[in-house]
Image 1 (tube, rainbow, N blue to C red):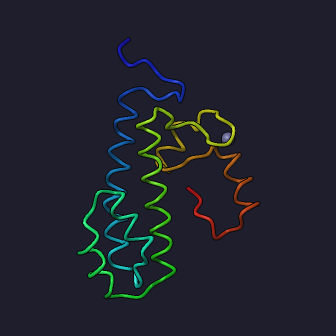
Image 2 (cartoon, rainbow, N blue to C red):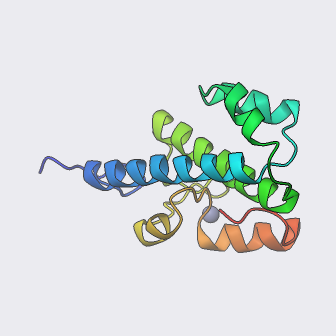
Length: 135
Ligand SMILES: [Zn+2]
């Protein structure tokens, strides 16, 4: 049939849906960064530039509230989302970055930015500690 699954087991329609979901989550994360980023570091400004966004308005708005923990969390989420979009572009989306196996549609639907399968994610969390963004 037309929708031939790739290596990651996703067909074109599933990939398109997950891609749209990533874009939506990215917009939400950006709003979160703007709201909660008390301190916008140079690194953040670079990230915004890399994302093709105007950093200036975001930096100005970020002066408002100071919730550093929340800010770093949404930043981590944003980075994960952008990385996932990069993997889509490279045709590597949906594959575990550790073991190379298919992550699986149910997990990707729950966590579109997931870069590891459940098993590797659990192992990574044990190694890296709870502060690490879990994908
Ligand atoms: Zn894995």
